Image 1 (cartoon, one colour):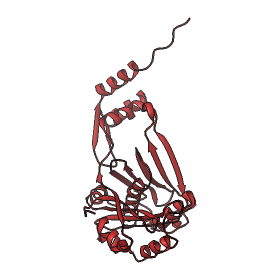
Image 2 (cartoon, rainbow, N blue to C red):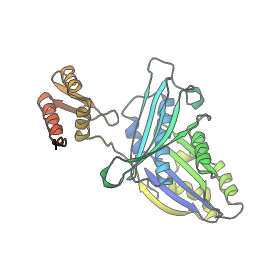
Image 3 (cartoon, helix red, strand yellow):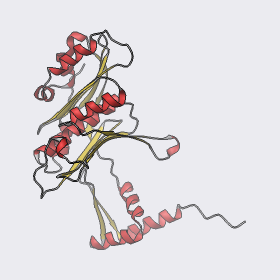
Image 4 (cartoon, rainbow, N blue to C red):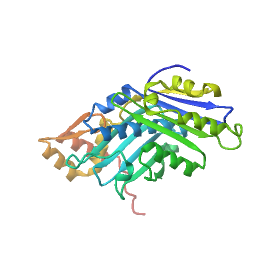
Length: 299
């Protein structure tokens, strides 16, 4: 096993009948955290959600993207983290700057809060992506325990999950018993007991390969695949142009007027600014109209 940072490592404990994923984000998390000034609790939750998204893309079969999203009407309004099948990540948090600092305790978010895991995989023929969504119960005080409960209930398999984030990095470790009768009778108990010895500081301090070796060396862990991770945004000028066309001519014209002659759109994930002048927007609408199918003739 190599010891690279910003990586997702899938592994197997064959004798115990347990599979796992470990993730560590250094440069990726620092790039994301530098794009906004978040209160400490919000930054930690966003870092943990980002590590969770990277873990889950290693756990499930993802050909498109997987996102973790939290919404509430409290001080923390939105938390969004996304990981793609190729290992690119992005994330953002929105909070009420006039309210008291948000709490890390998920149970304090309010009765209307919602936490979801969403998977979007490409469909055949270029049609709209196939979308799956699972809702996560907010009956735990932290994201790790909430997701742990979700996987135990949805997949009916014993699961352990730990997430951590500080100012320098975020990390996560997930264990799950293999389905069926794989592994010896005491395998899950052994793996779970070793998992219990892991704290947030050690999780953050060690690269995934070293962490797995230190925790599970007696179980002869086998690496099942390692993937580099990095920050990247899926925004583009073409996608912003399509969004402006979807607004309609009146709203697009209003955007040009309010921007002093240019419609200005700033990506909240990466900070990229996109500007469209009045003539360019008119051209976008002409192109969109030309691509519409012709009306059928009268027979």
